[in-house]
Image 1: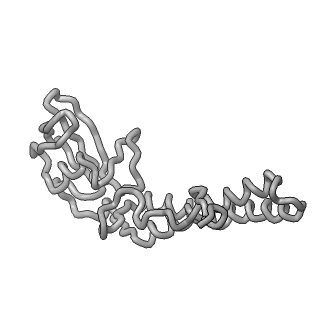
Image 2 (image 1 turned 135 degrees about the vertical axis):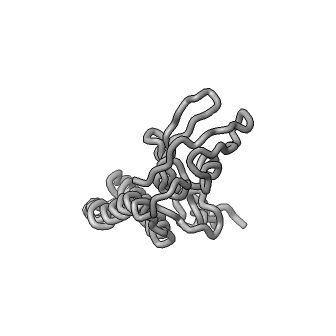
Image 3 (image 1 turned 60 degrees about the vertical axis):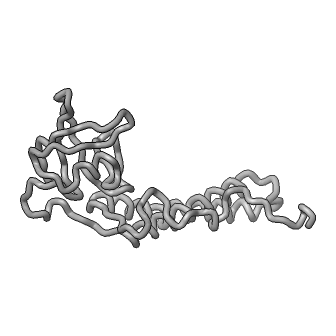
Length: 183
């Protein structure tokens, strides 16, 4: 077959998106805190109600100017629309699969579950604080770690005062859970 009749992908096909983006285990629910869910929903609404209509207006104006093959506003606008639409699809799927877990509604316990803020100490007596959140809420700068991360998997279901083993690139490390709270 001649190359003239084959479709070359520029990476913008919507079919090239994997079914599950973001590292969730197959079939797992997308656990989220209420704050994370609200942030993601706000981004989706902003894209649909504000950004997409503005870009559509620019593309319509640019298309009316004539020759589209050399029209930068038109070409960039179409590309931006594809990016916005891809993000809208991603956010919609993630929100649809999400299960909101409010850590503030958890009965008082010293056991580590989703949404817990955990203070732990390593063998060198260095204390660190992490909050176990959903995969879409990870923010290492604020100490927010995914519930499927190695540190969270080591901490989950343990109690305050327990010593657990965590696998690190340098080998196994023992950490002690100093405090567990649900804010």
